[in-house]
Length: 339
Ligand code: KG4
Image (tube, rainbow, N blue to C red; front, top):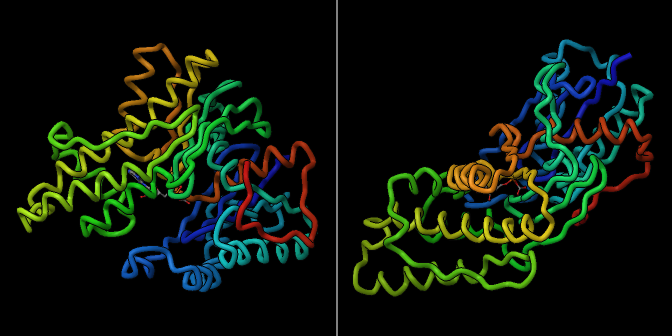
């Protein structure tokens, strides 16, 4: 009998449902919430209301597209945290109802673990392109920048994390200063392709161990703009591409420096990248070059699995199901939940 996991993701501003059958992706539906664009960031109350509206049609579409029926689902996996409490509550409540109605187990999933395990989603039965253990995962998103040693599907050790802003946050906040739309990361990525990073020097953090910090870089970016705008009101407009290129190059450099330190110290030469910022073309390029230079095996996710999606929740549910790790009906969402 196949293990068919329905995954539900509702931690932030995307409502997503996916079906994974014996580790193979069958469907992955994501409903984006455009309502937040005009506010320049996610408004939690609006996000949970939109999840309420989206969740049933999104689950319905995911089950239909999988070719299965609701009665074929073996277990329902849902994001328990970390994330926005009101948003998490929608997915958690839905999972409880589905589990009760279908008399199937439910599985609580850590969103960050989901990002890492996205690398184990199979596109077909004979897809064998998954990382070998142990591997290093660079997890970079809007809320996290972490270096993780992944020893097994459910055994992960966080060895470094951001002490202030995350990489995605640095992209988004600096983009806001340049009046770019939210989220700024993808926009900076596109503009950076037309700019020259060497024209602008931004300061890089000096933090011990494997920890990250992006707050100083953000300040250095702000000061650079403030100093130049005094002489030229149009400085941002005229130099947007260069500013984006410099910002991206510096963030990528910082990420790669710590990754390299961890590779040297552990000797682990299998590296994966995950999270929203792993969509960044500069980071992808830097990782591929690193792989060639140091003969490391690099795993880069498909763009669809870099963003918040339920397929990664379903695959994590699959591995927790195999271990019999289930949640009870009185489970509550966790706004904060470390790996
Ligand atoms: O993992 P994710 O979808 O959401 C959470 O953090 O929960 O990550 C979103 C972050 C945002 O900060 C966004 O600007 C960033 O990922 N991002 C990018 C790119 N695409 C998304 N940053 C840089 N370059 C990109 N291409």
